[in-house]
Image 1 (cartoon, helix red, strand yellow):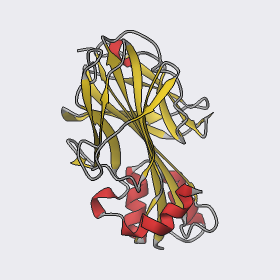
Image 2 (cartoon, rainbow, N blue to C red; image 1 turned 180 degrees about the vertical axis):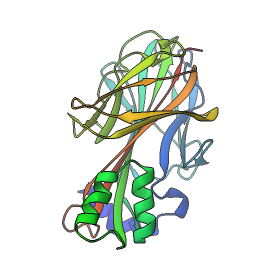
Image 3 (cartoon, rainbow, N blue to C red; image 1 turned 30 degrees about the horizontal axis):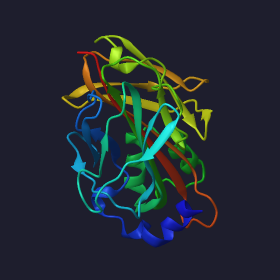
Length: 264
C-alpha cells in the first residue's frame, strides 16, 4: 500500500530530472577486495554518464545488499550522492538492490506516443489506437527496480542468478564477471516472480554510446545478449500495464536495470 499512497504524496512533485528515464546503480568499484568500502551511486538519465540521484528516503522501498543468505540495508546520508555506502564482505558475488515507490508523470498524446516508441512499448500504443486515444494525454505512474552485481575478491562464485524478489527483475543466467568479450550473456526477465515474454531488453556500454544490443524476451522470458567488449554494462527493460483503479493514472510502468562488469 505504501507504493500506492506515494503517488498521492510525492508523485506530482517529482523533479523533472527524476521522471521516467533510465535509472541504474553505479558502484565505485565492481570487484572490491574483502573489507573494501564501496560508494553506491544512483544515476538517472537517457544517456551516460547520467545525473546523480541523491538519497531520498521518501522514494525508497528497499535499498540493500544481498550476499549468501543475508540481506543488509545500504546506509547513507539523506540528500547526498553517493546515495549509500557499504563494506564488502567475504569473497563471492553480491547484489545491491534498490526498489522505489511510485512517482507520476502526465504527457501529451504526442509525447506519450514518442515515449512508448522509445521504450519498445508498441503494444501499449496499439491498445491506445484501438480505443481512439492516440492523441489523448496520458497519466503514468512508475517505479524502479534496479540492481548491481559486485564480485568481491574476484569474479568467481554464485549468487548472480539468485532472484532478489524485485517487481521487475533482470537475472543473468551466466556469471557476467567471467564473460569474455564477444560472448553471449543469457538473461531472464521476471515480473512478479514469473517469466515475462515479448519485452524489449537492451544492453548498453557506458564507454561507447553507440555500442548497444537489444532484442525481445522469448516465451520463457529469456534473451541472449552478445556483449562485444568487456568492462561495465547496463542492461535495462521497461514493462507497462493498465494502472490500478484508484491510482489516478492510466498506465503503470516498471523500470528494471542491471549493472555489472564483464571480463576485459
